[in-house]
Length: 173
Image 1 (cartoon, helix red, strand yellow):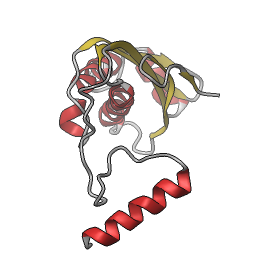
Image 2 (cartoon, rainbow, N blue to C red):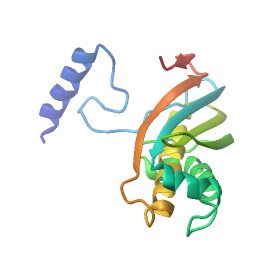
Image 3 (cartoon, one colour):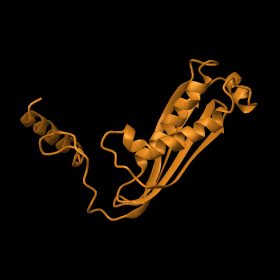
Image 4 (tube, rainbow, N blue to C red):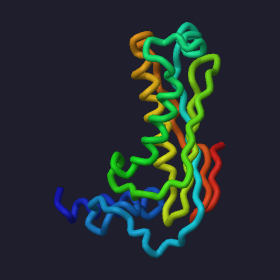
């Protein structure tokens, strides 16, 4: 696409949303945002998701009888590792010095709830790290349970809270 056309498209997107698209340059090309002038602050983000599975699969997980062993421990570790590698997976994400990452997995009536919290003291937030942790933990659960239930579904991956930085607090409704 010619640069002029891309720039016009980016301008239309800014006008339609009323917000500046920080990852698009004046020509409409993707770019990494320069966070050098931003203040270093404590930042935290929490994301959630759900792996929907049958009650039979949940019973196997709860009782530790799945063919691949402790699926919850593996998913927890995979989520934490993914948070640390987010900038290698998501284009334009900044590498961050993560000071905390946790992944909590809870067996519920319809599946396994996944919650990840990530923290840093940096110039940009950790929303993508928390979302990546949830997604990878969920994908790990799916991988480890697919022999039992191919129809398992990873759903509702979303940011539920963030703090720090210029935009301040966010809590999902």
